[in-house]
Image (cartoon, rainbow, N blue to C red):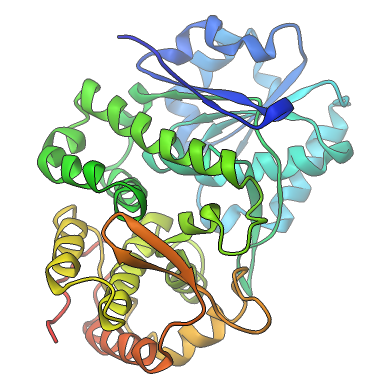
Length: 380
């Protein structure tokens, strides 16, 4: 199968995204590491499936890999300290590189450690989840979580290459695959109605991991993100394009923080967050009822949750969202939808409409649904 290659254009920090099936077995995909010393970071879930193959391809010894426990709760300051200690003990120099083999947690943690180790060394992303392949591995956002909020400690640090082997997706549990689809839908909602319609028509083939359709899914999402990152690498433009990639994330991060990282997968929280953002957009008069229904129907049809955790109250959302990185001059800014395919970052939303949205979702969420369950949002 043909390897699809995209480029993230950032001048001297530009890098390729390679997408295809079986890439991990071909040393040609790892030219960026040729002749360099490297260490590899992964987790126990991935080690059993892919670690030996990658070590063989890269001609690395098992001692050059650190295997961590999986899960969002381990994307922490303490875990970053452990990784940095390991890098120091290995005597890693500034000309070396760190390889991230895993999903968003491993990618974020490895990228953060690479960013701060000796003021920055190179790293390579090998994303193995759908969420990481379409979103978190591209763009250079790295971070660890804090009990007060998600991703509050981090740095911008671009990888030197992204190798997305779609064959690794076959080892994903169904829940992880569904969570990754939340980020896929995000791109259609915020930037591309053609993509959104294509997802509606081909959802079954994508979820079945049809090689052609899953590679096209990853490529189309990465193309959107690469273009946006190229325009606004560090979210430095006020209300600029990169901030729009956070559609659903302000609500979603609040859910993750409230739940204690790990109970909800990131994509599950973002799915509910996108439903909430769409609801608020409708209350603002920006999207029609039919567009709201179309968005929430596709999210629910995947099996993603559409309501926040039981017991979560509007006050919990307000408290946690007040620490969001998009807060400016004391004002909360939210990514909302002007229409399907057009997002906007706004602090001018109607506070009454936000309160009504929070009340509606929190009341509906009192039924006790878990994050793996998708429940229709009551009308009205």
